Each structure stands twice: as C-alpha cells, then as structure tokens.
Length: 483
Image (cartoon, rainbow, N blue to C red):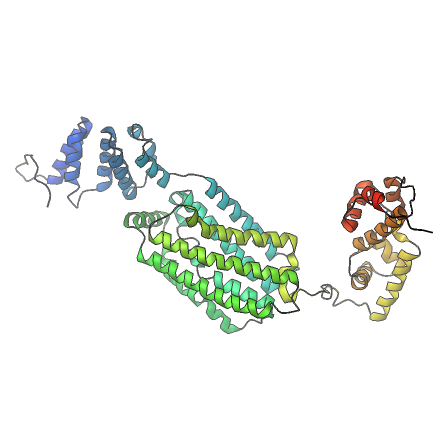
C-alpha cells in the first residue's frame, strides 16, 4: 500500500497523484533534495505514475546529494524507460561522473571503441572481402565455393553483429537487433555439405533440403521481430536488459550448440574416412584437418560462451574466445584463398587442371604432337627465348597456329604456362654461362641481356625463384665444368 503522507486534499477529492507530484516537484525545484527523494519514492508506489520523469529527477537528486550508486541506479532506470542517453552528459551529474558506479552506466549505454571492437570490425570486413573473392573465383568448383563462401559470410556477419553490440551501437541502430540470429542453424550444414562435396564428390539430392528445416522454423519464430519498427525493437532490447536474459535466449544457445556439435560429429566422420584417400593432395588433407579443428574449437568456445551468458558474465578473455575462434576460421580461409586457392575444390582439383580449360578445343592429338616438336625446335635449336620481345603471339605465328593452340600445347606437354617455359630456358642458359665462367668475372647484366631479359631486376627475381640464389651468389658458388 502507498505510504501515508502529510498533505491536505481538496474538498472535491483532487487526485492524490497530482498533489504528490506537485509537492515533490516543488521540493525538487527548491533543491530540497532529501525531502524530494522521499516524496518521489512515495509517488512511485502508485502504478498510474509515469515513472521515467520521476527516475530522472531521482537520479539528479541523488547526484546532488553525492549518492553516486543511487544516482547511477536511477539514471539507468530512466534510460530503460525513456532511452535518451544524452542525460549521461548532463552537468547535473558532474560531481559523480568519475565514480565507478556512474562510469559503469556510461560504459554500458554510450558508444565506445576498444581493442576488441576494432579487431572484430577489421575481421568482419576482411571476411566479407574473402567471401566475395572465393565466390567469384572461377577456378573453384561452383558448389564448393558457394558453400564455403556462404559459411565465411555468415561468420563475418555474426562478428559484425558482435561489433555493433560491443560498441553499444545497437541502441543507435535498433534494426541490428538479432540481425545475425537467423543464421544460427546454418553453420553446421554449410560446412558439412562442403566437406561432403570436396571429399566425396557428393551429388546433392532434394532430401538434403531437410537440413534447412531448423533454419526455416527459426525464421518463422523470429520473423515477427524482424518486421517491427526501430522503436519497437529498441523497446524489446531495453526490456531484455531490465528483465535479464530470458529462457528463450538460453534455449537458442543450447539448440545452436547442439547443431554445431552434431554436424561437427558428421564432419569428423567424413574427415576420418577420406584422409587416407590418395586422390586428395597433401595440401587438401591439411586444409580439411585445419578447418575441422577450428570448427571443433569453436564448438567448445561457444559452449563456454553459453555458460558465461547464463551467469550474466559478458566480459573477459573466455567470453571473447568464441569470436576469436570464428575470426581464426575467417583468417585461415583468407590465407588459404591467397596462398593455395586450389585446396577449396578438394577432389575436383585435378593434377591436369587444364583438361577442362581445353576440353572443347579443336586441337587433335596428332597436331598437338606436331606442334610440340616444332616448339621444342624453336626453344632448343633456334633459342627463340633469347629474343627480348618474345610473346605467345610470336610463338603462335612461328608455329603457324592460333594463340589458343600454342598455349594449350605448352600447358599440356610442358605442364607450365608460356612465361614459365620462357623463364625455364633463360635461367638454364644463364646457369650454363655462369658455370663456364672460370674467372667468375662476367657482368650479371650482360648475362641477363644475353639470355633475353631487358633488365637486371627481372632476371634476378626469376633466377632466385629457380635456384633460391641471386645470379651473383650463384656465380660465387658455381663449380667450373671441365671442357
């Protein structure tokens, strides 16, 4: 029941709340904060009272009295009722601004940036770039690249969502509320079918769409949230803060963890069954092993994350570990896309990867062999590689064939491209010259010109790629060849 108050009411029974409010405001304006606090607390006992303005005045009163904990408590209550974070910059709170309690509220609701937020934004943006690079890479098998690029995209989207929340920008942009939640049950299926595709050359069936059932059901569940206005989403967000983490949140975390663990088990079975497959290259096996291990690390980190959230712990290294594991996945895939892009296709990566490139070529076997012999003569006898302006078009003209056919002959019979073939012959000639230089006094640039290079830099780079030594280093260590 409301407290009894020492006040005289009008004969017509004037509204009690109005009288209480008038008295409390009068005391507040007179800066009689001790009595004002008492009257405002009495006023809050009436359910019909609009609480936000009362919380605001209580916060200011408590700050004026130097009660920093109470001031912080009431200013947060005000924000949860009427989210206007500008109040935190009000001069009324200057005397409590540097206290631990008030700074905690500022940290909780005002935009902020730190090491973790910068790292997450960086990884998210890199992840989107990597997903795009993989998706548009024509050398990766189409189904495999759609699966792995989608997998990286939702990782990056989740990390971006964490960045938004970590910097408190979800209050400013409430439409980001639960923006990555709809992908919760896609991580496992995408990685599972990617493994099946690259490790078993799996052909997709209609029944595989059943793996999307959890995601579709979850979309039905969250769709009403996504169609809300920004103001309504902000209200939901503030309600969650006021009431604490809900049972629904814990349920979603448990279900997502179950999905990750189940698909992790399926992926492990595929990995163990195919790691002895001789058709897979060593690089492919290492790639699959590392992807599997990072996924399992994420499963354990996400389990720890769920436990922490269940206990309302939202900071610390362990809390960030689940995002670190996701970031590790993104960066490792990005590294692989740059260093060894062929691993993404698994069994679809053939040693003779140019087979498909020339599958529809009109070059017959007999003509191909004839052109090969002509090409060998051009390089071994005529030493065409010494011509500094050599080009594929020049080779095609000398072979009396098309540029496409010349390229195909080089790729199929020498297992390298045109530039690699030219460099091979030039470096071999350069090494012969250096080996025969008994006095070791030949000028390196002269040798470069002799074998067909236009400058010393290009020659040095090509020579070191072939021998791991610069021409000068090779000259010093070369052994004279007797005549």
